[in-house]
Image (cartoon, rainbow, N blue to C red; front, side, top):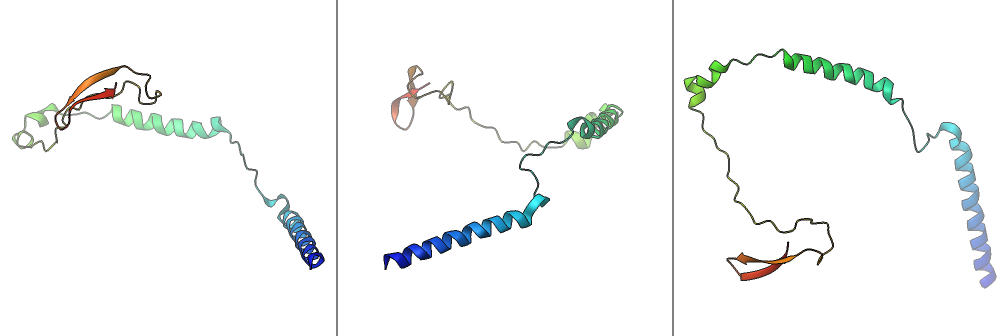
Length: 117
C-alpha cells in the first residue's frame, strides 16, 4: 500500500513540474517585468506646461470686490458647525506608552483621570 502512495506522489510531482515548465515556455517573453521604469523627464514636460497654463489662467482672473458689498451676498447665512475644543492627549501618539509625562486631566464623567500626555 505504501508503494502505491509513493508512486502516486511521484507521478503527481512530475506532472506538476512538467506543467510549470510548459507554462513558462508558452508564456515566454510575452510577460512584462515586475518593475518597470519610465522616462520621468519626458512625461513631466507636458504636465509642467499644463500646470503653467492653468496658473497663468488663474493669474488673469479679476475679482470684483463690489460683489462683497452686494445686498444678496450680505444676506447669505453661515451654516458652519463649531467644533468644541478637546483636551490634548499625547504630544507624540506614536511614542511608546509610558515614555511621556503623566498629568491629571479632569473628566466630568469619571472625576480625576490620569492619562499619558
